[in-house]
Length: 216
View 1 (cartoon, rainbow, N blue to C red):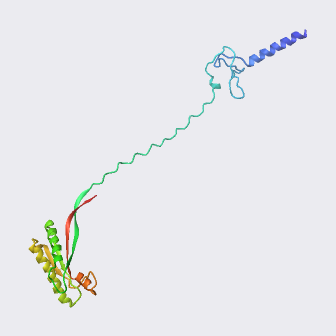
View 2: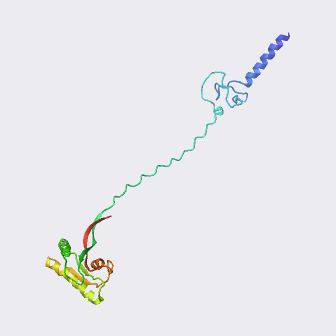
View 3: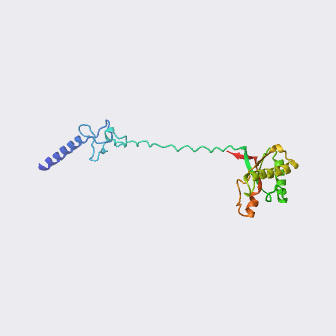
C-alpha cells in the first residue's frame, strides 16, 4: 500500500505546480503565468515562454523590455556664409602738378652774357615751353659772393633778363615768364674756389606741368 501513496503525492504536487504556473489565454498567450494571472518573470526580467498554444505573438506589455531613451538631437552648427566677393577698386585719372627745375645755365664772373652751353640748355627750355603752353616759367638769377649785395642783386636780375630775352626771341611769350634776382643768396657751392663761384653764377628756371595720375 505504501507505493500507491507515493504516486498520489507526486500527482498532487504536480497539480499544484501547474496551478501556480498555469498558461493563460487571456493577455499572455504563449507565456507562463502565476495563480494571480501575472506572468512568470525570471530574475533578469524576462517573461517565460511556453504552454499552450505555442506562439511567437507580441510580448505582453508587462514583459516588454524598457525602451532606451531616444538620443538627444545634436545641434548642427550651420557652416559660416562664404565671404563676400572683393569689390574691385574704382580707378580714376586726375591731373596733378609736377614741379620742373632746369639748371645748367651759368655765367662768367661779373657777366650776364649767355655762353654756348647756356644756349643749348635754353633751346631745350623753349621746346619744353612750346609743348606745355600752360606752363609758367619762373626765371631766377644768382651771383657768387664777390662784391656788395646790391651790386650782385642788379647783376642777378640782368642774368635773368638775358635768359628771358633769348626765350622770347624763340617764340615764348614774355607773359609766361616771371623774373627775379637773388644776388648771392642760396648758393649751390662754395664761394671759396673758382669752380664753386662759377656754379653759383647761374640762372635756374622753375615751372610745373599738369600730368595724369591714376588713383583709386
